[in-house]
Image (cartoon, rainbow, N blue to C red; front, side, top):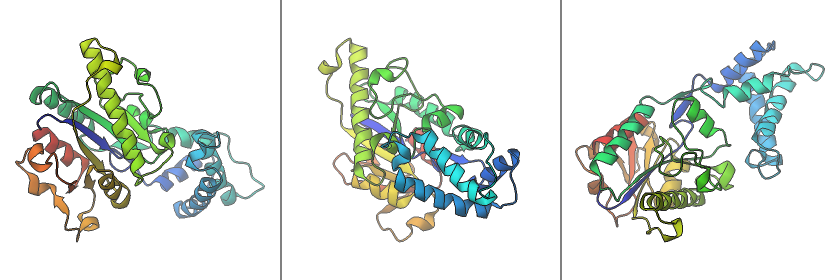
Length: 310
């Protein structure tokens, strides 16, 4: 890859992890555990969409701006989803909202995409073995979500840094030199804008720059202010939604990798299939001064396997 740092970021939902079953079916299952019934997943979905839309208009960004916070925000959504289904004269069980919050804050409701944990660790190991010591790999998450993503990834077995946008670098337990599977989290909840807005991608890049400077300062016994400027970046973003992930990343100067149905990118002349890039090194594919490239892959696992090999 030459003298460049690699900034590899992922979307969360649908890219790094997936629901264990249809989300609304999980809602129904939890409601039944709490003693509710008489409605279908389709009923819940319609009511949920209305409740979600109403709360989003009243309290944008999961209630962050109004000081409500994500937990209270989602409690309101859950209440307004189920109350119309059971009628005004019936009280909702007290444990319904907490159970749903817990399920979708952890591995109870989600599964890690195949191979992600072991492949991320293999990629880190290969980077240490193959690339110049002066270049670094930073793995991050850029996602439109509330602040539960780190806890979800942690519950799924990844070793994740607590470093979030807006938090000081020393918030990362163990310091900037500790090896995490995920080094940083850039969530719309913290940044205040959502993909495809380029500002969320710019925020992640700035976090990565500061993290590398802190790593270099720690390794050479210098203050961060005296650390050498970071090397140029090769920026890759992996996501499963074309408009938010591909268009957004490309507009911010990143190289997007779309994981999903090939039909969604068919007819896009500028999209390369990962199979076309086999046996090519990263610096052969992504030229330092070239325009961003858009790549299609069948899965996150396939992307990681390719990065490890080349």
